Amino acid sequence: MKALAWHGTHDVRVDTVPDPAIEQPT
Image (cartoon, rainbow, N blue to C red; front, side):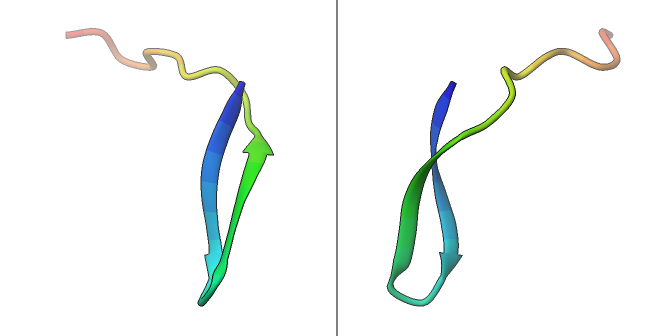
């Protein structure tokens, strides 16, 4: 999926990241 990622001052990019998943359901 696409996500807005902050890489540093004045450096914000749209990156492809893995889909979020629930690791420990409560």
